[in-house]
Image 1 (tube, helix red, strand yellow):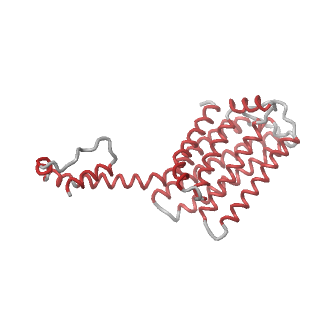
Image 2 (spheres, helix red, strand yellow):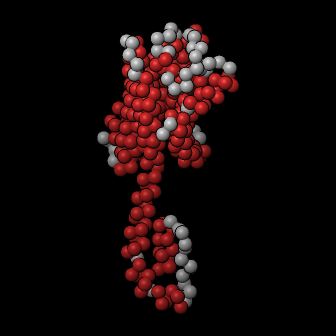
Image 3 (cartoon, one colour):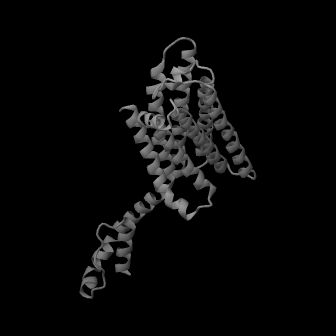
Length: 292
């Protein structure tokens, strides 16, 4: 799978998860937890979209500045990091949730300012759509911009992974499964940052490990996106799936009783037509209504 296609598929998966959560956000607009989840999904998808080579070329061409897409992508990644930390803060709870969340937002806002300033001070005249990190790893100011965003992303991914896995030990069911998947996704995100940092460090020592900073990091990021979306959606869908299983079991247990009453139900027309293409809960309600 090409880099551009992998990016767009990952973006689509994340924004699909955002689409699933959007109705909940519309019903509970003031819920900071839901806002943080939607921000994580939306910004993560934006990172993949902006980082796709075709998008990079289009942004550079429209903006008229070589590699303009780089600071925009790094700023989106930093925004995703801030959203991840805010989500973790709301998970943990406590009396200082809002204050701690604001501190994380301010800290990552400062990082965005640093990314913008270092890009403006540096020089990156040659457009690089896939390997800018390693190509400019030794260029003054541009190198600092690269290391700044990678360290910010690594910090956020590590905190998210550790917090998710710790919380997973205290809960069960769908929430536990979702947290484990989310922690694994954050671990893959940390792998993305580590692989790029290692490739950049190798460039400082005169080695060329570009593949590590392009193909390996992209695969880690794509897998992390998939695990993150599934981790967010599992706690939402697990209760519904459990309810459907219970409805199917009850529906099957009531079949002998309905069969015994079939003659009366048919002769006196006490039963509505059987619903077609209905959910297990709806079919159970139909059978219970007929019997009652």
